[in-house]
Image 1 (cartoon, rainbow, N blue to C red):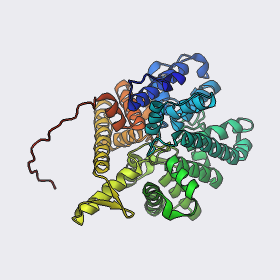
Image 2 (image 1 turned 45 degrees about the horizontal axis):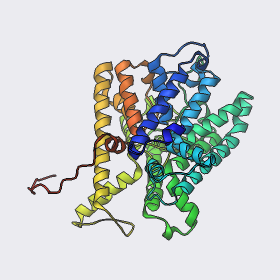
Image 3 (image 1 turned 30 degrees about the horizontal axis):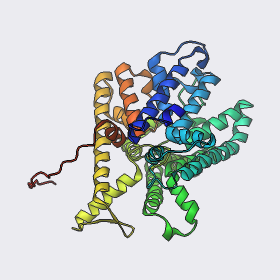
Length: 445
C-alpha cells in the first residue's frame, strides 16, 4: 500500500488513483484464487476472482459466487478488507499509514489525497483524512455493536463476525452479505426484512456513508449553525432527503400493496435507501413493476455524494444540472443555488459526467442483452447497478458469460474511480491552444 501512495513525481494525482485501485483489485483477485479462500479448498477461476475483487474494491456488491456459501472465513476476510480499502479509498489508507509511521506528506501526495476524497482545497487535507478514517471506524463499530445481539441470537458466535461484516459492508455501501445458505443463495438480508433494528441500522449506515465525509466534517464543525454550512453541504443534505422521501412514497403507494402498514413503511423506506448505492435488498426485486424497476435504476445512477463511500453520478451533479436548467428557463446568465453562483466549468463537468454515465450504462446494456439474449430492461438494471457501484440485481449475474462479466468489471471500475478521473489520467492536458476557434451558431432543443 505504501508503494501505491509513494509514487514518482511525474505521475499525476488522477493516475495514482486509478492505478492504486487497479493494483488493489489485482492483489485481491490473486488472494481470492488461493484454495484457502474457498470452503471447498479449490482454486477459483481468475475471472470469478477478478469479478469478486473488483466488486469488493469498487464497493458494488454484484457477485458470481454466494459470499457465505462459496468463500471460507479467510476469503470473506479478504473481501471485507477489500471493501474497507475501497470504502476508505486507496489513497486515504496510504496516507493514514504514512501519518502513523511518522513520515512527512509531500505536496504532490497531499494533492493526490485532495483528488481522492474530492476535497475543495489542499490545506488541512491530512487533518481531514485523519478525521475520515476515525469517523469510518467509529460508525462501523457502532453499527456492529447494535446488530451483534440480533445476529448472536440467530447464529451464535458466528453472529459476531456477521455483525462486523455487515456493518462494514453497509457503511462502505458495498452490499455484500453473509446470509446465503446451500438451499437459498443470493438472498441478501431478506430474512431480516421484518426486523426494524437490523434494517434501520443498515439504512443509517448506508446514508451516513453515502452523504460524504466533507459534509459530515462541515456539520461537525458548524453544528446547528446551518447558515454557516457550505453550499455543497446544503445541497447534499436537502437533495438526499428528497431522494429518500419521494421514492419511499412511491414504493409505499405502488409496490407493496396488500402488505401490513408497519412492514410496508419499512420495506418502502429500505428500498428507497439501498439503491444509493448499497445493494442490500429485503424483498424480491423481480416482483416489482416496470415503473418500480425504472425508479430503482434512476436512483442507482444518481448514487451518493462526492467524497463518500457511494458511487454513481453523485447528488451534486444532478442538482447542478437542474439549477442550470432553471437558469435557462428564467433566461438568467448565471447558475445560482442557495444564493451562491456556480461556475460555468462546474456545469460543464456535470453535463460531461451525465453523458458519460448514460453512455456506459446504455452501451453495457446493449452488449449484455445482445450476447446473453436477455430482456433489455433486465440488462439496463444490471449495468446501472454496476456503473453506479450498487450491487442490486434481478438474479442474472451468476449466469453471465465471459464477455458480460468483463463488461460489468469495466463498468464497476469506471463507476468507482470516476469517468473524469480516468480521462484526466489518460489524456495529456499539457497542450493549451492560445487561439480560440471561430464562433458559429448551432440550434439546440
